[in-house]
Image: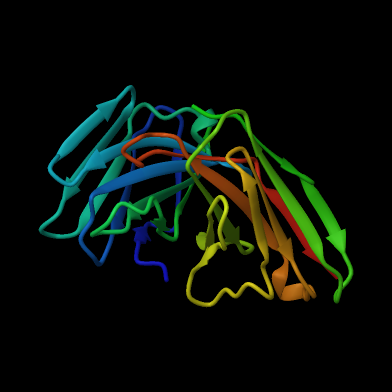
Length: 113
Length: 115
């Protein structure tokens, strides 16, 4: 079953603006990951944040994690038209180390040039 | 990272038929997974493909409908059996390369349309 809820479901912004997407989950986790999917193709791993981390940066990406609220956010700064895609959060199965991921419903981002 | 290929990339099939999807990785991996993504939806894990033993299926998925093979550490197949239009989805394989089983790498997906 899907435990991740993401909002907004769809987001449309102008190039250069920042985009923020949120993800909530229900169970304990080892880590939370964000993936990008372009036009129904394969997923690309963006960033991983562990349960003992609160914030992580990678280029124009900033991820936060609040385990007390069971939520995470992904911020894309200075967005580009090429950032147009669907973004998914995914949590691993805890306890255990099975490698299985549970995906959120996703946010569709459109960046207008 | 891992280079993963899937065949076919897309197919249109008639109901009642079966389709076997192949997933090939460029190097040996421990874990391989199969996901389904229904139109406009997120990904749902179908099963974990275990090398040398039967696949481990998630709730709602059964071996008779989605038989999986994993003959070695670089290859797996997923068969969608006795297809119906509800099986129209993107099917993706993924692999777990990291020793700590964190990051997964996904294949490009197989887009299936059942008429």
